Amino acid sequence: MLLTTKIQSSFIDDECFDVVERKGVGHPDSLADGLAEAVSRQYCLESLERFGVILHHNSDKTALLGGSSRVTFGAGEITRPISALINGRFSSGLGAEKIPVEELIETAARGFLKERLPLLNVERDVVISLRNNPTSSPGHVRSQHNSHNGTRGNWFAPRSLADLPEATHPFSNDTSFGVGYAPLSVCEQVAIGVEQFLNSAEFKNAHPEFGSDIKIMVCRAYRDLNVTFCVPLIALHTPDLQAYIDGKRFLLELVEQRVMEIAPGYRPSLSINTRDDHEKSELYLTAVGTALESGDEGMVGRGNRVSGVISMMRPMSIEGVAGKNPVYHVGKLYNLLAQRVAADIYRMTGCPTTVCLVSQSGRDLSDPWFACVEQARVDCVDEALVRKALEDVLSRVDEVRAKLLDGSLDVC
Image (cartoon, rainbow, N blue to C red; front, top):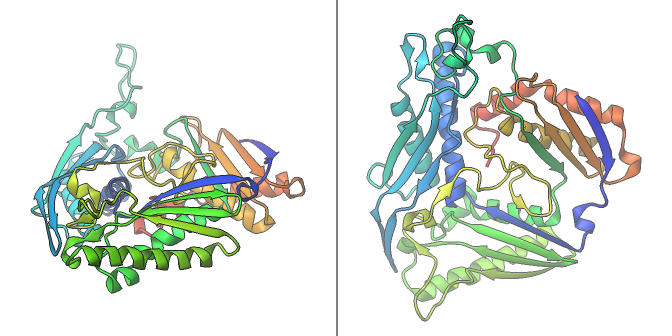
């Protein structure tokens, strides 16, 4: 691993401007990410139970196509189903023993959507389409001079454990990079804190009239903190226009208080559902709490980064983390590991830190091709400390993988 350390010009909170977006758990892109990850996790668990290893797969090209809904004050219904397109590649089994791939994926997909959208009838109003292409990637060249005993040609049709080389020697599947940083900026803290509060089980139980497709944009100009957020109301729990208006007013007051708690010393200015036109009854009123019910689409990789936000002023990878194989896919693992390394270094030094890990296809997973660590003060840079932090985290990839499989580590 070639390690480079450098000094950042300044920490983001010391700059004059910052802008951060957060997509809530019911946003179509967040749903696509979560669905892809739920499918991958269930496939991994099934593989481990049957074979003791995770078979080759990926569901990171998953997409959601919006349905149609009809809403009025006091009632709402889905009139055309939502479509879930599970696009990817899945091994059908190991040798002669097969996995019921289609059944497994359908169960995982419907279970996830039911958990995220409790008002959605997932049996009636969701269509699941699996598009599985178990063709191996380039690398297996047929000629009269080889014995065809390599693993590449059987990547998604393994004959035995010998066709799963990463089970004994984990390696990078791709040449890519991952980025992480710590601590969160004020804008990032506000975006995450507000969305998590409004989508918490406690808040939803007390206020079932609000849906989960919440989107927050936070812009800071010096000490002015401007927050625009969209929150759907549920038609069933909104009897008339006045109830809708009262609901928005309640949220404005509540969120302003929350912002001031997260960011004391800043001057907040809030806006909600800015596209509403009360006179024309053009409102963010929904049947099940998401724009996915009325034509909007969701795609893996368009949601929050592993930091929990989409932060324009920060470095980021555009890898779609959700649904990637957690055994060797650096597009997933190096983003998660970089985030962990940055947090560890910040905790030890108190200095804002950014970490970039670069992989090289086929290289040992625990030995990145390049690593770059930026810190915000010259007195913080300690290459020996940085290298140890990197090596400690990279030696514990199994811990990250275990958290992904038990659902305690959220990638979206």
